[in-house]
Image 1 (cartoon, rainbow, N blue to C red):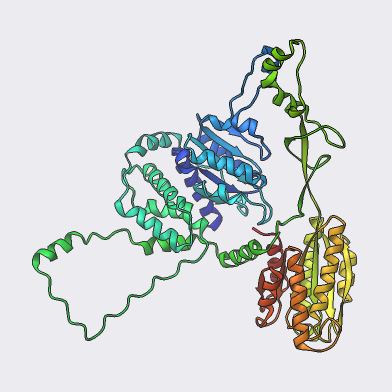
Image 2: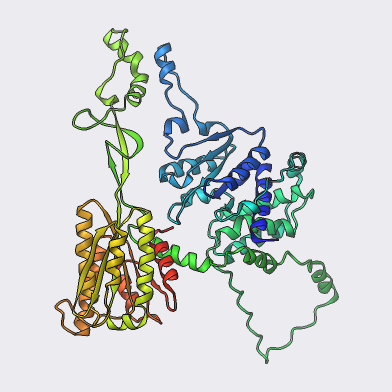
Length: 567
């Protein structure tokens, strides 16, 4: 059986477990782009949850729809305040498409509703194309089952086999399922060894284990059920490879031998010798589920999270003319403000009876300045990636070719995302801006091909040019980020003089200046072995340091792209 077929069967099992008791598991986090594979999974979900109330949310849904608000039409028609029921007030299952676009405020509201135990569950459809486009962690923590079908082939994804009669029988059996006393501690230990810090995860795994037992027709959770729970709940959240437990210290040789226990004690020990479910067996199951590139992904994600201001896209800014609509706010008319008429009338509706009695006028709607609501929009500025490339002699001899190839790959990706790119090269006694922020891929490739190598390493000059270029990009409304690719230590100062001590001091000053701008970025060590001091320079810049010895152009470009598109 191929890996894709195993993943699809696991998705089938996850769906069956979830359908037994959706509210106990919180929900499903499904990461997959829109396509036939996701459609087949959702078709199976509809079949498994037939009879349940399913409602869809929009990532920009407002509080009126979530918690209820004024029914404007009914209020104006009847003359009395009429309220609508919110989606979170009725038990059932919620489906959130484009979950990666949910704002922190919406994620917090949904997480609170799931914690309130109102019989709600959520299926978050994460359609993110890059690691930075993902569901809010606070909301993901409430969802027991995490599935990633992003690279699932359609040939390995036939229609899900949902046996509705078996689900009915399993629902009847589920309340009778018991859990061994050791199960909770086993799951908690496996979670700890996998680096899963959330206390919800073991409880969610326990709920999945009970559902798995009910599906098997059993009334007690057994080892296969715990393995299923670990595969579906704990393994996808792993943040580290489980390490072997520390070996027990050997007993000193001169320690006196313990006295032989009497028969009574021996009998008691035999009675307590019932072996608990071995944690190592469960851990082996979890290890089999860990992705082979877990370390690289964790490293890249950690590096990205450490990047200040990193967002994977341009900076957000509020406006009143264009962009993504946001909830209206209280404000005053005038200038370029655009009044949200419906929201204004909703704000005024509750006060109509009081105002009519106060004014004695019943044939009109009374609107006060405090009722005015102003439209808001959010737009993102374009991003400018400034590549600062070491073209000194040592780099030219070692990795400049791979660096050039990586930059070309990155430029192609940046071009497809309509990012702006810029190129700064430093060599000899100074730095040169080879390319100001542009979207021209052809021009960039030509400049890159003409980039010579040789001379000293004026690192400070390269960083200063990047700083000036970043200020220029920011003044044009762009959001700059800096990717420094080098394999050596600075040996030429800002004045162009060969002085290692002064060059290091100048480079540190420039790095601190970049950090003071709060600029995201990355330091890639392209040397054949990690260069001493570059990690310190990255700390001064406040950006991640990523040594990539023996990496080709493809690997370097993948690392940079992942880090600048943070998780």
